[in-house]
Image (cartoon, rainbow, N blue to C red):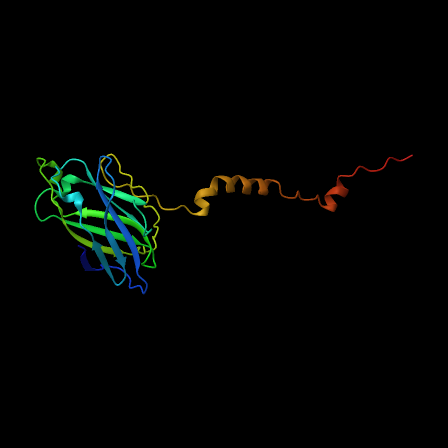
Length: 213
């Protein structure tokens, strides 16, 4: 007898056409896959779950529970699956959460997530038998990550021997930076200036008279 569960989609977009996804389950250890049911994606996620013989026997809390999915309606095994430790199902009133991650269209499944309501230390407790949990299923479209703002790295802060922060020196002016080159250049220009020409009168007075014959 089919059990029909209709659950509200959390964070999913409304789509017009429904897409069906086949779910499979098994316990680790080489067992064959058992049909878990068919999930229909739409404004709500509807799970048609058939009888689950996998849970009709007593199982201890060792090993893994494996859940998989396929987009092929005639598939006998999943295309992809995930594993959850069976110790996460130990105890009473355990609830499992199945999240079908879709593409932006909200109808194409791209991944699967599976968690349970067991406490974080459930696997540290003594091993006990597990029981079939109640199911909560939803679909979730991809989240849009905001643009990342890059900031310039802060300058490294230096400290002196007393533990006080060193104050960076004030920037030097052009003259403070290059005075060592400017002064020799000025001296060179002054010393290599044009020589003064002797006056005409002084040149005539210093001339020797011509010899007489």
